[in-house]
Amino acid sequence: MYEKIRDYARAHGMLDKGDVVIAGISGGADSVCLLCVLLELKKEYDLEIRAVHVNHGIRGEAAAADEAYVEALCRKEEVPLETVHVDVRRMAREEGLTQEEAGRAARRRAFEEAAGRWRADRIALAHHKNDNAETVLLNLARGTGLRGMGGIRPCSGKYIRPLLEVSREEIEEFLAEKNISYCMDATNYEDTYTRNRIRNHIIPYMEEQVNPRFVDHVCGTAEQMAQLWEYVERQTGEAAARLTTLRTGADGRGREVVIDGPGFAGTDRALRPYLLKRVLGQVSGREKDLETVHFKDLEELFDRQVGRRLSLPYGMKAFRCYEGVRVVSANWQAPGENQREGASGKIKMRILDPADIEGPIEEAIPKTPYTKWFDYDIIKNSVIIRTRRPGDYLVIDRDGARQKLNRYFINEKIPSQERDSILLAADGSRILWVIGYRGGLGYEVTGQTRKILEIRIDEVTTDKGGKYDGRDDQRACVRRRS
Image (cartoon, rainbow, N blue to C red):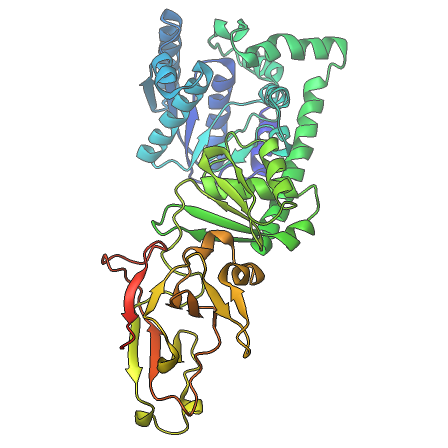
């Protein structure tokens, strides 16, 4: 069995020469076997072995006996040991976890902290083939996808699981042959936890009544599912790179992702849920509690009309926009500027005399997107830089035909959530310039112009001294003189 484990560890690149390895040792058969195997591998890889034992504070005298056994074993094998005491019941109450979840989290924390102090390269856990089969069945019962069907992985970050290719029976036989004792945890035979019920009832029934190699077959299928999951992950990453745009909010914390609609429609249906899950995970920073129903609702949003929205877990919102679908986090705050580059900045206005301009006036008109000239004498009111108001309109042709500003936004497919933050140069309700987009007709500078109004965008600030946030009018203005 040792050779089987050694070959498995080698095949998955679990160890390198000179690694410092922390072993999680409970005192049970699995972890005792793990320690024995690591001590053998130590000779080949020149390893430094350290051990961590976590006392959960649940089993009283039995837990104290396990702790004493692990201390004696590590002392005999000259393995440095760190024992950690945790009140798992209290931890479960305070953190809203089941005792099983709290115990797992406590062990992880203890291992991670020890790894930091000892500068460990690897953390070895004693999961074996039966644990893997239990995990797959548990995931199936609770509802899972490809990832959950893949079961426990041999390596994940610093964590390695050298025993994953061997069964519980092989481990116990190995220890019996070596005449090595171990502790028996009576709670493993109780039906308190769901995993225990799978271990004590479902797997034995399947082995006795259906196929004695049930565990082998479950683990074989899990390996195929894991390989398929890795392929899907690669495809999802490529699709995300092509079809999504990620932005960070004004405060540096909120996130927004826009998914390209036509590109998403051309994506294979089998890949879409994985892409959507990745997007929601990116936006929220977590994937727990993201379920199939959320991906289904989000996919259906692509077929809705522009402006429709959807509420999602963790306070996320999704909006149907012209580009496709936009997903924002609960703390999303759009940057305090237009989405067109250069649309932020100080707003500077000045009156120019054509006599001071060299050459033909038509050739001197600025060609840059954020400096515009207007015929000052045509302006009827004060020119104010502000955001939209009811009744705003543009003149769109030489005959004076009008278009409502809202209709212009719709025609240009400007997302509804951005329209309130777009700056406008306004002469009353008539818009001279949708800053960053287009100007209205009727204010053009010509050879007959006597005075020129120049508006230049360098840095937007509000009359309150803060940066423009899309809500306040800009009080930089040029007033008509009577």
